[in-house]
Image (cartoon, rainbow, N blue to C red):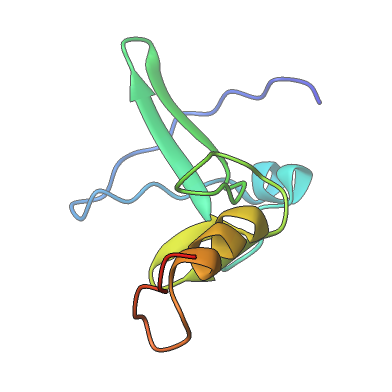
Length: 91
């Protein structure tokens, strides 16, 4: 995709409207989560890619109790705790 540059104003509430053409070209439909990153050069907005909060994996990630967790880490947690949240007895 060719780089597009447009000038937009920031509203009093801090919002910036992304132009329709850019939203359509990048697949940013209403409700799609985005990541906003800032560095010394500016601000970058990109589609959010779910990643495990514990190990960083992007495979089989689900939202659990306010965190993104992969199936592997969930399995490891299940090995330590029972269904009631109690620590399993050491074997």
